[in-house]
Image (tube, rainbow, N blue to C red; front, top):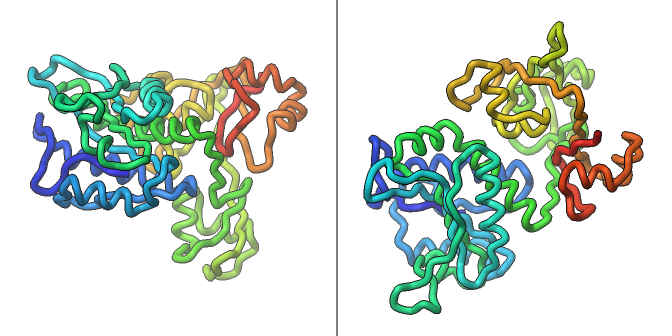
Length: 342
């Protein structure tokens, strides 16, 4: 994964914001999301560093090799000659690749709440058989896409990006998973967690929005000592139902975004923001949110080992009905995917 500009190259600048800083913020969150899902990912620059085009390409090809299965996501913020004259996301893909990934990314950015423009290819002005952008032209057989999240010199676009970039990144990540049918297996199974190097009870409790005391009580621990490979039970999600059953109160956990919460509870980002009188989508761990309850539709979050058949049997429905409700074209499902079941 790469990101535009850096160091002496600020990229587009407007409204006191530099493209290189905003794309670094976006890329770091994207890096964390892929890591959480167990997907190999490399960040081409992790600091405000000047990286020449040739060095950028060298780092890309050195990370996982010159292979068509390597996905290169180049994060950018657009700019226009006339301020406030254009807004919305664009995705540019290489001449050698199909439009599938670019199309899915743009659609997911739209679902995450950003305005969208188009996905396209751009040819060199001197040789129409070659790509215009070096990130497409020089990166061998990989699958590179340039994601322009919006226009830095559009006041409304910039505000949307700064307030909602995590939701937009989640959209891009989900587009990658969907396009390539990647099924992720996080390091949790059900309500358990496998201790990794560097973990402490405090860091685990913070990650899962619980307390050290609750983890110790659930696992009959008499001290704070844990060991690598140890399997810990994690307290299940809890929420409070309102008196009139119109909403639940949900406590924000590490890694949550409004888009992610909206998908889980079968609602929209706009509905959550309206119910909580929010003017931005920024969340903080421990924040309490009112979530509207959809009384007619139930949802299920896919777990390891699930199939459409096993889920249909559990909810006394059919595979065909689940596929119809979720606009599925195949029987492939992935861990963490939220399905409507009736």
